[in-house]
Length: 171
Image 1 (cartoon, one colour):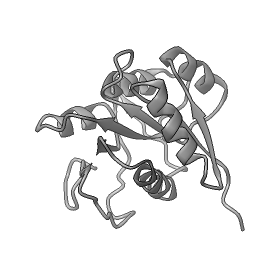
Image 2 (cartoon, rainbow, N blue to C red):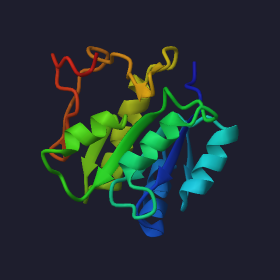
Image 3 (cartoon, rainbow, N blue to C red):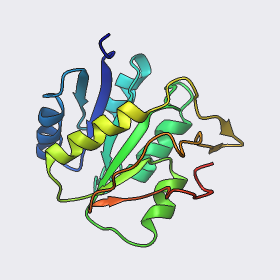
């Protein structure tokens, strides 16, 4: 039985990075990759098509990852509560875990990274993504479904682990 096509949207800090990442992700059978150069284009696409995973960038001047993710998740027209989010960043600091968690970002990868490494992380996320349990929005705050124990993580050196095993924040 073949896997269904999974849609990955890429909106990075600059068009060159978006293009390189999109081209690398598109080499994987089963992935339909859509690249965007503006938040407006991404939102317009998401109004009529489901996105399984978004790759965005904290360093994007138009729409930094935290603000973009929060905006998308709060837009009831988009129906993206179950969308996975991988954010890229140049600056990793102690506040990053808090910011990413508050805004519904599932994984943060430090730049520079290999586009093939991003492909590995996208595939791991999509194989893990729960499709049947949408995340409910409670009083304007997104509550992520519990994903603890659904995957044995293999954290690389440039991945910031948001929900360590045994953490109560993933619940």
